[in-house]
Length: 239
Image (cartoon, rainbow, N blue to C red; front, top):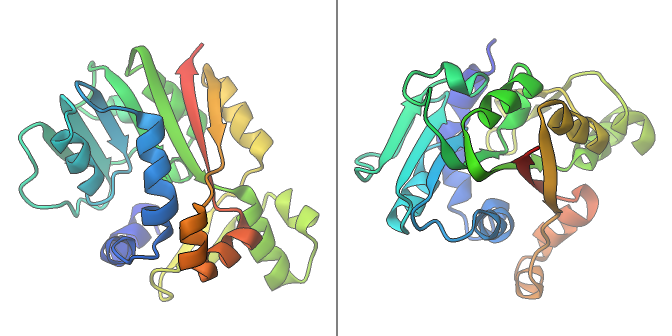
């Protein structure tokens, strides 16, 4: 099964889950994504692994000059604004996509998508070649401790054993238990080494937390975060 097949099955389930008031995408990830992208006014944004393209539409409607979204599912929101282009394609080799080859972008985003690239270093190098001067690549990843905790509980092993395990990890999607996802898990060091090998410098790393208000409103989400640590965002620039 190709990487794209489970995501084609999951696309609608994921978008439905994002709309829930207690979605971690809504209450934890999206606020921080907006902060690190900054004011989108006049920006050229490339979102690699854009899902439905709903976020691309948001940035376009808030002043971005141009937003291009690429996703393997091809299941996009209808009638995007004129300055939004949504492309069905594989993010693994961005500069091989005809519609974006030779162009440059102020922000290139991998929001929960880089781990599905066939070769992360190649993908990041390719993205770096599309980066405008003073541009930034923003990578959001699930915290690797999350997968170590889950595997340790299933296998009856220790957190350390599973954190450093190089075996592919298969698990049922939280959005649709009938769909199984497979990841090659990484440590924080693995992630940093991939950035360095691609010629990128970590300008900022963030582990977002729920606001006190949302901790009180959604205690079940805070309980999950206390065990799994959520996500990490990296703001990268070319060396």
